[in-house]
Image (cartoon, rainbow, N blue to C red; front, top):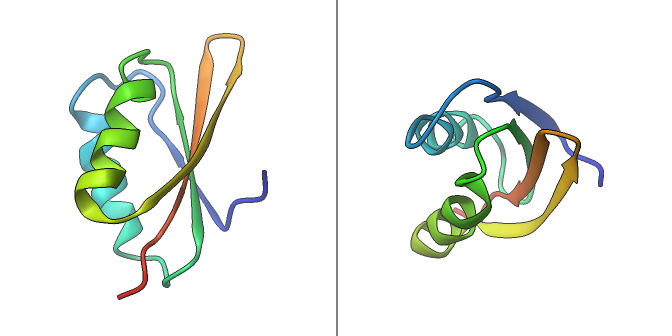
Length: 77
């Protein structure tokens, strides 16, 4: 999946990947896609829940070894 920006959250645990995502997504324009790379298994449930709560779109999750990549499209302002 093609992302406009990438956010490295490897080594961070709940709730930090969500906190960092919330900060980073503010810098994006509506419709842009953010790739979040993490190794905390909790992100697979936390990120879709956060997207539902904030109106952003969770596009999917890809697991590559220990890394989990989650793709989020920024909601329209």
